[in-house]
Image (tube, rainbow, N blue to C red; front, side):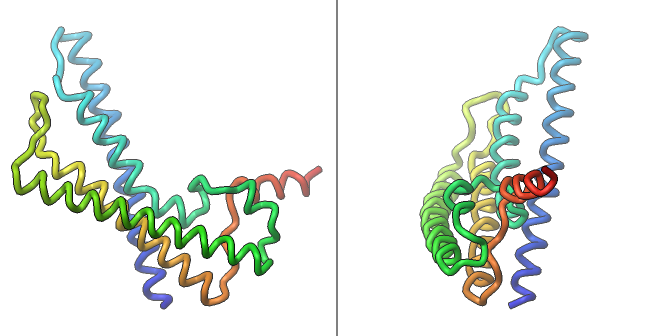
Length: 180
């Protein structure tokens, strides 16, 4: 089971690294657009579309890493009221993970069908770039897949007795309270 957790963590870290690369590429594209418009009175004509796809890709492929590191927005107010070591906290976490796995699975199934349809029918964007729509949708599928694996990994850790993850916000609040 440790190998599974390590593999999922490595995949999540890869997703985060790709997310950073996408952010850098978007920044460079925006800078190119600014230079083209201000110095050459022209445009790339694709910046808006590519940046929109980039934001979606960046967000989706980083979700697994965010869950693993405790930076994904969760129901911190509810969870923080329960002691991290309590049986009730573990039960709430297990139910939340099962619900997240279910909803992520439904979304993943929908996007897989959409990718299949866009690919088989040759759908492209209605812009000058005419990007095949299965490409950005496939990135969403990859991100959802990484998130599902990370959720499954967390569920297995919970069921094997590991303590629930601590939220970044609750850890910061605890550290601040200790300082005062």
